[in-house]
Length: 166
Length: 282
Picture 1 (cartoon, rainbow over the protein chains, first blue to last red):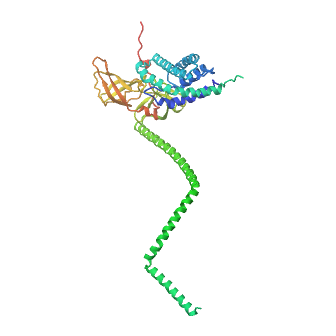
Picture 2: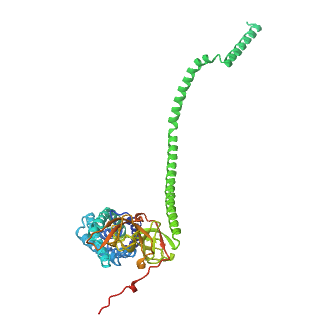
Picture 3: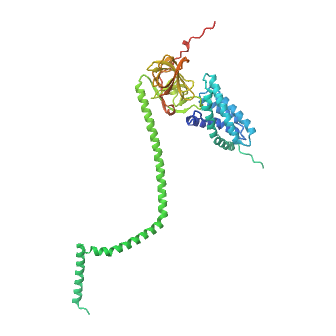
């Protein structure tokens, strides 16, 4: 159930991303709703389907985006790896973990996109990319990180109710 | 004991008095007297009526306020509904204007066949300048077809599904277009940047390029039809130690406001790869 529900969630997020979010840039950077959903889901305590969400999110973004095939999948899986490592180390302060995951997740996904584009002959100037795209994207993702964490937290509570110890 | 004659006299006198008063009143002779008599009466009447109305308003106020509040709520709901209709109508007017301009562009270029499509999204990656349109192979759209609007060249179809297609904009970092500058007829290569700007490179040093020159597709390479407006030169970089000049271009199309585009469906890009000579290995 937790894996299947990711499909309509990512579908809705992708529609929002392409129709609205990508048209509201800060300088030239944009927020990444699917990445935030993957990170927020992975940080939830009782969630065991973080990898599945990373795979489904990466595949769906890969279908829609013009990035080279597999770029989104690889980057989101690496983001899941980061978030699972953070969950074990910063479990007492999940909000801080979300910000840290957002920062490194954004840097990682965009670095992988730049590398993939370069491999396909599309050379992106690194200085301009970092200052005009990556940093503004990090800021926009920070703004949406807390709402994403809260919403996905509610979903996790619904799908994985807490067991009461009697 | 009064005699009948004295009662008769009294009655006649009274009648004559009344007739006289009426006659004087009709003649207007009693107006000043009536003013002095009626004015205090009217004042007293006014005072009493005002107090009564105040008491009546106080007693009936709750019903009035409730009725007025309900009416206010109904009117506010009506205003909201009308405002939504106004917004919808304004959007329809804007779309009609765009479509009208596109029809004018299509009529001005009768050699081409066009399929109109609405822009429904942009690429999720901020490194890429692509848009998604709501027409695909079901409408005869194929990969490589040029995309224009009434302002000029927008890009070309990069990927197609049955009901949607992805358009690579001319501002994309990987976009390269063979162009010519007008009026100098100089050839160059237009390239997009990640900032969304476009630059014409590989302009010969001997070419005379001026600010304001128009940039058009040249048709070389077979990827775009010739003579489609791209933009205008806004700056020229010419250094003696460079092999080529470069010029920054202001695109004719406003890419931040793309709503409806035309796909040129009767143009197929030419694949010149077989004609490119390959080096022979000894």
